[in-house]
Amino acid sequence: SAFQFFANFIADARWEGRQDLYPGVMLMEFSKQGKTYWVLWTEDYSSQMTVNLPKSPTVIYNSLGEEQPLSTTLGLSFEPIIVGWDD
Image 1: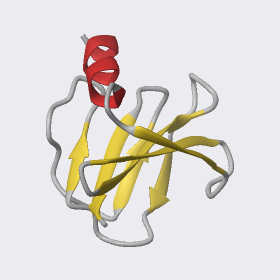
Image 2 (image 1 turned 90 degrees about the horizontal axis):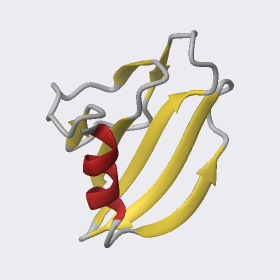
Image 3 (image 1 turned 90 degrees about the vertical axis):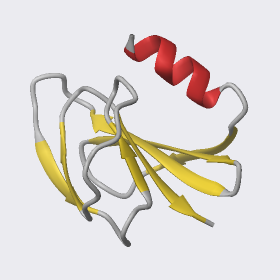
């Protein structure tokens, strides 16, 4: 389940804070095993939007923990997406 994946993912991650980089988007930053991760989703469950990342990620996971194609442009909804970069 999505909850199980996220709970396992953040179990040994360090909370870095909430970022306000995109209006209407919740963005939480974590660090784990030499990587920086952003968890992103829209603030409104009914909205969808596209955001451009500041650089190319090394990994993208959907809310179930399945790897997604790498891109600097993300389509967001109320389901969280996890994006990671090497530090």
